[in-house]
Amino acid sequence: MTVRRIGLVVHGGRPEAVAAARAVRTWCAEHAVRCADIDVWQDGGRRSAAAELESAGDPDLIVTLGGDGTFLRGARLAAEHDALVLGVDLGRVGFLTEVPAAFVHTALDAVLDDRLTVESRMLLTLRASRRLEVPAGIGELMRYGRRPMLPPPRVRADCPSGGDWGLAMNVTALNDIVVEKLARDRQVSAAVYISGRLLASYSADALLVATPTGSTAYSFAAGGPVVSPRTDALVFTPVAAHMTFDRSVVAAPDEPVALRVLEHSGQAAVSIDGQLRGVLDPGDWIGVYAAPRRLHAVRLGPMDFYGRLRERMNLSDAPAAVADGAAAPLWPVTTPPPGDLAHLALPALPDSSADD
Image (cartoon, rainbow, N blue to C red; front, top):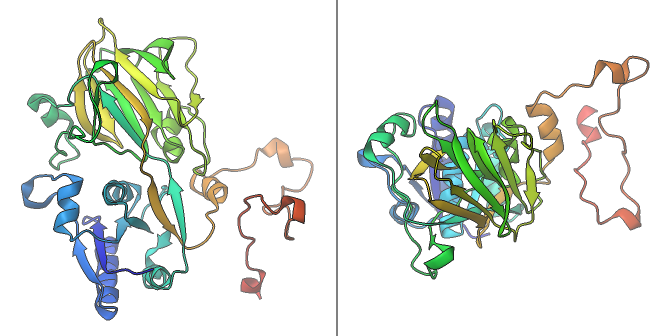
């Protein structure tokens, strides 16, 4: 593919990320590709995704160097501009990044030579009963680490607003949108509607809607299901719910999930991919649905999601399962599928020549 401009999103607190960024800049200089750092925390404040991309010259490819948190920052920017995103893996337990830092030159060569796969992933967006804002005092308590917070999301001017459907917000989430309690001693109480129908009213620490990509993040920690990132679905998961039915519900991509804060509830925070973006009062609501745009992530080969799940979650076999026999083989089949199964998505088999 043609790459004229690359934007870099770097975890500046990690020396290996800074070193990998130098390698990317060297590659860009050798291939006459413009390269610009995208730093959401410049000048002591935080800018919108559109302003960040404009300052970087509207890159064709965004390269993130860090863990999943850094990738989420880059993904938000890429989705805003419909650019490709390539994640360089410097994390420890993440699922999103693709390329080890040592192979960043090889990965960029593959992109330039069009030896890549573009993986399309579902994103979330939302509407709200009113503009999302963060009161100053709460913002100081819950700001993003020690960094300034993102500005409040803009209202989309290209969408009709009002009535039962609320305001369309300029929001994209790759992992999840969460409504959570603000005070330790006061749970959030909210009515949850799926596809326009009341499911139940919950009292919980938090209520979240995740994408399949986000199913291995907060939703997983709260007991939610692992969902293949190749799937399109909305995963609703209550967190520490005070009720018998505390299970996740997996909805179709065209079935929106709405959360309305009830009268007797305390205030609730709205977090988007882990960042506080607004505070809801009793009576306020948000509606979460699949975004019309998607994330386009660069892959250099088929992703072995379940192998990564086994590795990153340190899955081990139950002792009782192997007590009286051999352990299950890691690769149960070593031959190509027959014609009637050729449509199945299977990971590439390990290269046996690498062991010779």
